[in-house]
Length: 345
Image (tube, rainbow, N blue to C red; front, side, top):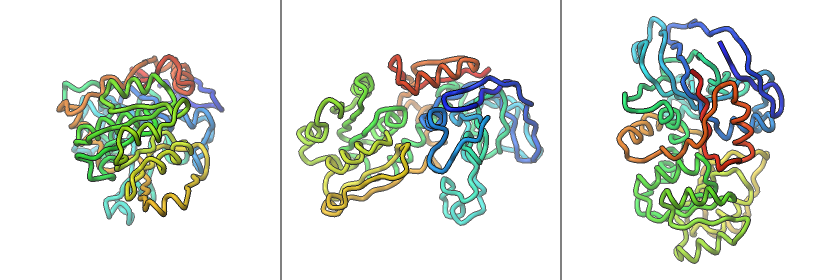
């Protein structure tokens, strides 16, 4: 089968590799249809690592995917050949202390698609995954929507961890696909005023079209002052969705006393710096968000029921053989890209 693998920093190559075979009774063979390009994929492409997770070349990234079940192990009962599915890239053990307390996202033996040292990704024609990673989708749902359920679930998980949401004022710093996912889910769950900041003007425009109360570019204006003037009581919760130190500093300055900062973005550096005096005096609660947990199926239901509209997220698409072009596009934020989707089969 064809597989696109990282071979070095900003290098990818289309390879012919063996089609995977089912080796366990709970496994499923999936024919991939689409794979989305995620920000974490781009981190691995651009720098070869995220923190302690370092790529050993060649390596295949990709974890936002959808496809069709082609074969199943003999103990698989949840799906059958021909089913259209969204892929949950997390493969927890379901046995450790974290899993037993409902925290599969911090499973001590977690395997995650496209994560170095855990499992290769789905930027290929076929993958083997456990039955628990297969989520059937309704007939009217597109494969694009199914793949988008993965980043949407991260946004949903972040919003749910920040509860309560209904009637609250929030700010989202960074309006990439995750920032958009936070906004869509927060809006659907009753957030009052949603402020958005991004250093890319076209993304601020997209936020406005999606219903943002106010937007701002931190490279061109004082976004803290702008938001404070627009919401005198200050945002109840700020979602950091871009992995930038400057965004954390803005979040601390703009959130109201007693408010929350949700760290959703993945930084390329190793340590955050927090202004101790400010976070202490304002008694700010800082919460890290690790991927998603028990939210993928709910995200799929929200898309399927038209509770929110993700149609504007995919802005570009490429064939598998042109995946490197897609990664370069996303890395450089060219051509007003939001989400690039790779057509596999």
